[in-house]
Image (cartoon, rainbow, N blue to C red; front, side, top):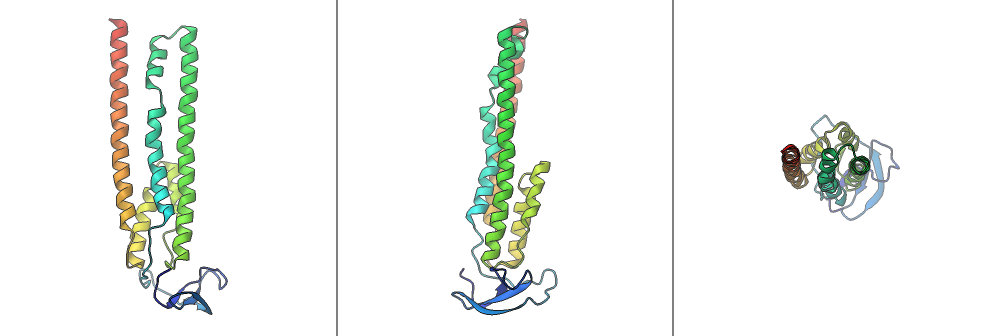
Length: 205
């Protein structure tokens, strides 16, 4: 921690949830007190590094579902549809469905990892002395299809208000990764639809 000397939320938890401990500029001391009431938006800004390894891992797992699109065998699905009725086609469709299920499970694993990394990021920010960082529980919105949007945006806004350095770089990187991911998804869907129509046209010609 590289913050100047002052009262900060107690990272040890010894003084309780609302307690503060004196940081002398190099280490935590034995002096503690109850945290004074601070109106909303009136937190004193602290000088800390807000870039944790955990927030970058949140961004990394955000990109994982887009990458799993390349694990879906679109050609195998088309072959099964066009050869429907044969035993080989039925076996191929079953394999394709199992493969798709496995890819879907990878997406759920990525969302779970994102929630865990959000909690670790929140905990690390508290340890560094950020007063009341954006709560990691908001990352559960990923389970509703929102991805990491709520946590990443809320994190950046709160850090902007409560720290000197702010927390914008991870947010901009996450936005870039998301935009590229959507572009890849749409490109894959257009390819898949085009290949499907092409296969159907050739089979009936």
